[in-house]
Image (cartoon, rainbow, N blue to C red; front, side, top):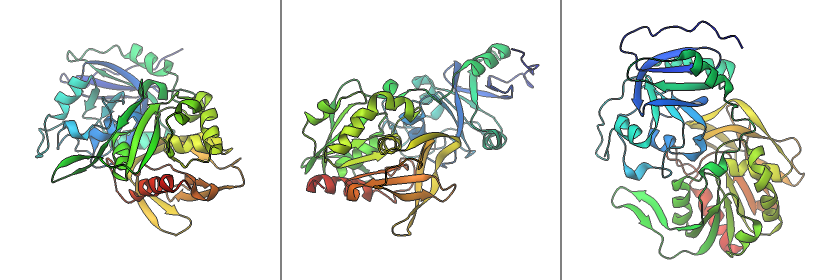
Length: 389
């Protein structure tokens, strides 16, 4: 394979490079850990919540470009983690990361990223990069952070071109829990931090394809005792826990690849008579179980400002989204209702069947970061589990 002639660093203070599979090179200053990270380069338009984004397991295999130029201003803290450790491969920002200025900050973004083994780059023209992604689709790329400013660009380009990409890649097993556990923590309050569910009304089993903590907090806040189980759990494993309802979580990778082991379980859950609720990858898994297909999107939806229209009520909600695959409506069973559509591109954003016993949304109603317009979906699910319908 012939490689294009690679440029040299334009300045002596360059300590990081972003190399895309098409040969594009973006120079900048390294952040966090030293080394190389390869993945799919995407962009997120949220103006806040960068720590929640970086620790969202759905970003496994991805390098995140933040379109908001000022990232790092509020620092990081232990409360805003959405999983035990970052799932993203790396991150890209425009401006140098400044010292944090927020009463909740415990550590600056640079020190936090270094401690977490996360590689970043600042000084990149993120507007140009975002336009390139919108025009050509999400590319494979490599971030290299080398304090001495020395880069083997042909080797980095080869690494970017050799990475297989997310289509066909199964990643849920890399981020799921290793064993079942109970969750009782409820939503954060400014006057007391996180609470604890002491008197649950029903029992929800959550299949963990890469679940976010704030999803679990919302389920507990709605009155559920939550048992989280691995993505590879069998139908028999789940039913042995005597759930009143089953939740299918968000997660990374190609849903068609995860379906190779999870789809038979989801189909049995649809036949079980139990209430079932899915978010993001869980929504896509339900779409596959309902006869639909999933497709790789050109650039995906990632941000905290995505308008979604409820086709039953006409209500428009502003939502948080993070997905690179979507449910294709072709093939969906006749008794399946599409209940929400994206007002950006018309993609399917919610499904329902059996009078609402089974339902799903592509959005992230738990926010973190993002709007809280649809917190009530968790209450709807738990109330359905309580009634058994």
